[in-house]
Length: 365
Ligand SMILES: Cc1ncc(COP(=O)(O)O)c(C=O)c1O
Image 1 (cartoon, rainbow, N blue to C red):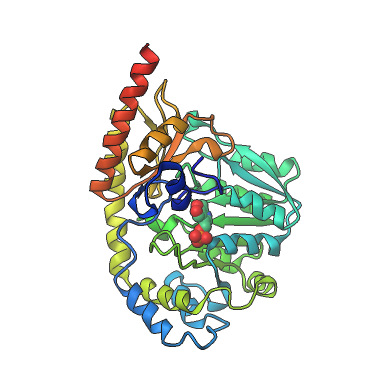
Image 2 (tube, rainbow, N blue to C red):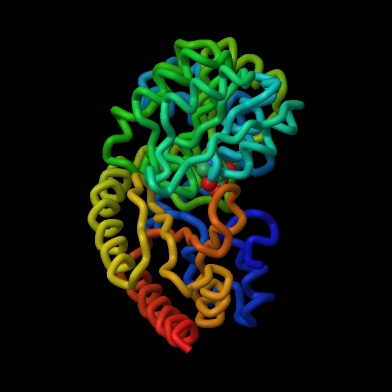
């Protein structure tokens, strides 16, 4: 199984499974911006290298200052660390929920983080007939049944659905602790109106986590942050390991954030390319769900199996994420795909069409 360690983008496992070098795959199983990293990242990395014999700024002031300006929040409302994965983990340790509601399917690390913080999770099942939308009444019901916190993706992974306004309000009303993971929100041209960072800076108990690794395509560097009320940030700081964001990541982070052009180009590129890929997959017989992110969740046509498809494509050097490792998705029926550049998307469609033709023939026999 490609998701041996629970995530997409595991090129080393792919190499072992499909007998090709790790760099020979076109990877649709993890969701990086195909236009990144931005131009300035390499020079920033080399600048940081010149100071590699000194500790990084323990308060990450330059990057936090740039993020504070971007979001219009005070610098005291921001904590920077080693990827959104660490940000989520620390937000939950700061909140210490007893029972945290999570959407299913959702990003598996939310459950792990709740458990690390000493709590248990209560899944809220999302349904395909509803396009996997989370409903405000289900959020309220989770609180009535004893959950004291909620952790939600905005947009959610793997479904790509952003949170509706009434769901946000229901969550803020019903729970003492709310963690909203906006790891993919910067891909949306509506980022400004959808983000909860400004509310998080003012409202104790609301923690927003963000990532720089997806949008700027620097997952190898690891860089993410939390926006919360300064009291919540102080709790996170007390729990965190010092210098968790390294000097190279801090310098690159500030450089890529300054590249407004890169951000605008990405936000302009994504919606039409996503629509095109979605339409082409639909024409191949898949049911593609609406997405505000740079990935698509799709249900395979009758007779096709996600595990089989993953293997068939893997052997052709194309990696896709099977839905089978996500809780509450019917086994072997779903895949998740990144939206990549046009030629890569064409290659995906080509190998997918070939597999689906074989699967159709096999099921007709
Ligand atoms: C929904 C979601 N949140 C957070 C993360 C973690 O991102 P980072 O690389 O910043 O740790 C991921 C990574 O796959 C993700 O899918």
